[in-house]
Every structure is written in structure tokens, then in C-alpha cells.
Length: 420
Ligand SMILES: *Cc1c(COP(=O)(O)O)cnc(C)c1O
Image (tube, rainbow, N blue to C red; front, top):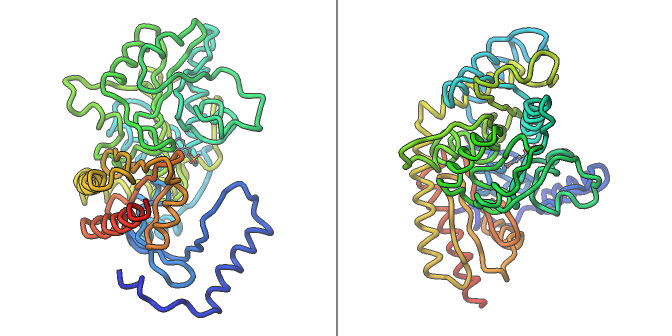
């Protein structure tokens, strides 16, 4: 990339980075550890910092920017809808919300959709759905898995199978317990007479891209049927065509003779392409569990958010971006596998589906340091776990951009190998 050879930015612009960081230091809750980048604008799969330096964005806003940055169709949907109606509350009907719900139902199966604003909130809806479902029978427990991630609300961190998100926030919301992922027997043993539901990510994201085995998903469905439990899927990160199918469980099971239907699915991230929106779908059989007055969200399903999400569906379908995620994702994965074979002392393994790719480095390379090194080479990626970096690019990433990304990663890996 030519930009790498640009002369250093004049001092006055470098001060801009410092000034923004100072604003944060003084005024923003320091709950995030941020990288030293102040980003200002984007176009497609590129972003620019305040110094005018360009980066190839394979982080995709953590699986959010499904059409990349500044997509003209999103801008158009935003501006046109904002001139008509931004918000009226859920006291009334609006067309975009009905249409978006229909779109999601068409892609999964008959059922009902509730709209909210984030992944954590979508999962909170699943928890309330499970509690309401089990209430009359005194059942409330939701079994989840270790290394899962389900959001940062109090119930979300109780559901999440990672100590680091729970620490300091005791007492925990009751009714959640974890068992190892991909271990059907452990799940079977954990079921008690108070269990109401099982919740998993069919592809675990935050802990480093771990894919469920097809027989695990099928076994969970069977367990739930045997014990009258709800099977809940958190598709917040892996969903919305990222794996090459609408939701990741469909990709996991694509070569199986029979599919399965979960009882509810949470969504967010890529659904709005950067405009905040979350949703959960509930199977038709349970359509009335959350009746009038049981659940609500002021901002949930505004005409503006739904118009944007509808446009994203349109573009993904018109341009067959699910197929692009699958093909270009496979191309990246293939390139990374080659790299792994050439440099096994640096890369321990690579895995993924479509545009959800994890590169596991050998333990001496910390994910955060690798991500920082890639910043120096003008590439954005996302750390996961301790030694995994994730690539979660826009669904319209081109083959050429994927090649650029691979070249950058290769140059870093080759350098790290030399230092061994
Ligand atoms: C990101 C994520 C969440 C939380 O979503 P927020 O929008 O940050 O609340 C929940 N589950 C999974 C699998 C996620 O990746």
C-alpha cells in the first residue's frame, strides 16, 4: 500500500491525536483499553486516522460494519427515512418494523421478532423469554458454556462463561451455569428439574472463533426436546450472512441430512451495519410467551433503524455477499493455512467460517501485541482470548483487499519468525 511510504504527518496533525486522547482521558469512563488510533473517516473496507494514514479494516467494527464504511445505499436509507420519520415509539405501528420482522422470519422460519438496540439487550430478551416459559413450572435455569460471551449486562455476565467479565460484580444474577462447549454429555448432566433453557453461540466469537460440531447442535436439539427445554442461539456475532449462511448454525449443519430449528435466536452487530439495532426471533410455537406488557424497549425497532437494516438485507442479497463472505473467507483461510505451515513456530492454528476467522498465535505472542504490530503495517484486526486475533471484515470485502490483508499478515509473521 502506497500510504505506508507517506512522509510523517506534520506536528500540528499529530497534536490532534493527542488532543483527542486527552479529551478521553479527562471525560470518558476508562472502561475500555483502546489502541493508539484516532479514526476519522472510512470508505468501503478502508479507514483513515486523523493523520491521514489509511488502514485496511479487517476488524469491521467487531463484525458490525457489514457493508463497510460510508456505503452510499446506507447513507441514502438513513437520509430518506430521517426526512420521513425517525421515531414514534412502540405505541404505534410503523411499516419498516413490520417489514424487517417479516424479512427475518422469512430467513429463519415462522415466528415472531422483537427489536431492541444491542446484542446484550437481545440476549436479555432471550433470558426473559426462557424465564417466562418456565415460570409456571418453577423452572428458570439457563445452561450456557465456558468461553462463551453473551454481553455485559448483569444477566449477560452471569450467562457468559469467562471469569474476567464477572470479576468485581458479585453477587451474580442467579439461574445461570456453564459447562464445557462441544461437550454434549456435560450438558446432559447439568440439566436439573429447574432448567428452562440451553443457550450457546454456534460459533463462539470473543474467546477466539470456536465452531460447534454438527453432532453437538443436533444433540442439543434432541436434549431440549427430551426435557422440554428451550434451545437458544446467540448469533449476535456470527449471524447475518457472515459465515456464508444467514445464521451460523445453518452453516454448521449445511452438510447434514437434517437441519434443526432453535426456539429463539438473538441478533445484533451486522444487522444494522453500524446503526444500533438488535433483535430476537422466537419460534411460532412460542409466539405468545411474551404477551402485551411483558417486554419493551423505547428505541426498539424505530423506523430509522429498520429502514437501514432492510437496506442492508437488500444489498447483501442483490450482491450475493453471503457467497462473497464464503468464497473470499475461504481464500483468506487458505492463505493463512499456508502461512501456518510455513511458520508453525509463530502460528499455532487457523480456523473459521466465511468472514469469521481466528488466527491462533503461539503462546509467546500476545493477541494485543500482534494487533498493534498490524496497526504499524496499516491493518485493523481484533484480539480474542490471549493469543488469537480475529478477522471480521465487511461482507463486501474484495478479493484484492483480501490479498492485501494476507500480504500484510505474511510480512508480520515472517518478521516474527526471524526474531524467534
Ligand atoms: C458482541 C456480542 C454480544 C454483545 O453485544 P453488544 O451489542 O455489545 O451488547 C453478545 N453476544 C455475542 C456472541 C457477541 O459477540
